[in-house]
Image (cartoon, rainbow, N blue to C red; front, side, top):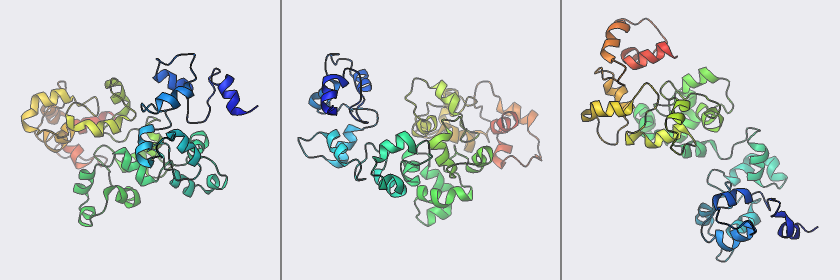
Length: 327
């Protein structure tokens, strides 16, 4: 039987997908006003595209429209479907079809849809949806200012921080931000695949419950800020930390800290970073239940003999406590 005729006559009533990129169940759940007696694909073609309704979670309609500018009067999804195997178009900004086909010749030689292959097979096989640099850049997990300030050679060479970290930095044990400790992560979770620890964290580590450093707890963060849209706890925190409304871990109460020491913290500054740079040295309390001065006097030796702590951890009451208790 002709597939088009079957879909129009019966397939849509059975909830069958006409293609990989149109999900009738998802489409209807996003738009419950659609009549149950209406073919959702027809609704999409006659109304949905004009109103900017994506056909599924896989296809970013407005991004595709702006990126590729399909000819007027032509279905945007239809334009993609006609060109999807060519490597010239991608369904969303999180996937690079040209990179995928160039990187994985078996997919290109078989004439497969690169994104569909990635979803059905490639992800499980450890294949990457974009280049390493593009994935890490899009994540926002390389703090450009932090990287340049702590790596003067990169700044002096006018090198791109993300590219430097991907090509050299992680291999040299450099941190992409305060909240991701390259050496610590490698030692804790090795062996890694992919080898770049930050890439591993982005692609699978966070989902597997890996911690990025001693300074950020993703599981706690997700529960604490359950009302936020959190695809990635660390990415959310990195984007919003300067709002001074979010804590990176349960031992640091950002509301308490800002209330107690607001006069010493400028707007648009990361409160926890302030605590590490300034507050810890001044015995500022990171939370109402942690008395920094008392802890320093009773628990921190004048001449620390441990070699596992950094100088900052040896001098900062909260970090000393975390290292002793948790790590």
